[in-house]
Structures are given as C-alpha cells and as structure tokens.
Length: 198
Image (tube, rainbow, N blue to C red):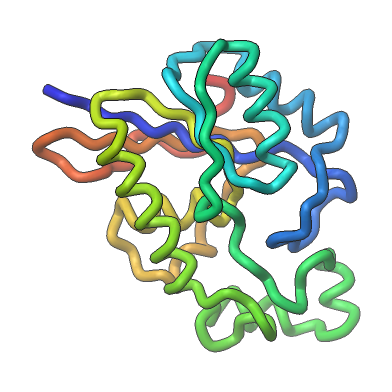
C-alpha cells in the first residue's frame, strides 16, 4: 500500500533568541545551527526536502539537501504565521506594554489577535492547502519539511480536523520533529510529535 510520510522539522534558535518573529527574516544562531545538525544526526530517511523561504529554515534545509544529495523546493505557504504588530517583540516586551495581552490572545486567538496579524483560519487554510498538494504530488515518498512552530501546529490541526482557534494549545520545541502519514485508505494522520533526533 502506498504510504506517504511527511516529517516536519522546526528550525533551531534564531539570532536574537525567543520572540514573535512571524516573517522577520532572522538567521539561525550558532546554537540554532548546532541544534539542527543534532536533530538530523540519527536516521535520514528522506528522498526530498521542502522548506519555508525564511532564512532560519532555508539556510539549513539547503545545507542538508546538499549534504544528502537531495532535491529541494521552497514553498512560500510554509512560512510562519504573520504576527502583525507583535513581530520582533519578546514576551517580556509585550508584557511591559500590556500585562494581560498574552493571556487574552492565548484564550481567544481569533478575537484577540495582534493588530495586523494573519487570521488563524487563513493561516491554517494556506498550510493545509500546501500540505495536501505536497502529499498528492509526492505519493509514496518520504519528505522532510523544514519550517516553523506555527506551520507545524497548523499541519497537526489539519490532520486532526481541529478548529483553528486551538492551534496555539500545542508546544513545539526548536529542532524537533513531527511526523504525518497518509495512505490510500487513510487521510493525513499524526504519527508522533516533538521527537528529536529521529
């Protein structure tokens, strides 16, 4: 039976540490590069690589694809969710302006999203469409997608048919793997989440 496997790998630590980056294009820090190489220090079962266009994903994906002799594709729909006015800010910076902003957002991410942020439903929609196209185009293959925490949340939400407002209730570690699988009989299903290295 045809089995299509998609491994989603979150990028490592970017320069500047933890903050709501969205589409800010910070590169990986030295520690982030080390995290990524450690993440792929076990099995490397992939036959192709797909990456977000943002540097914190793309630079490592290109280096890995070259090392393994694999083809690589850049998929813009696997870029992170846009955080609007929060982009570039840390949690402490946001709390200093509004101590209750994070609590409101995480309890109601649809109604309390940051000004200018991408709506969760739109975000899940674009990730889901890209994921389904990927699975359809690469049936029977094992694909690595180097991407972001938000994209992994949206992909798992799609596989589990969870509503968009639930995507922020999942923790995604840096440089960790999530595996989805589809067969001719079963749609995309969650196999595991948060594993590193494989």
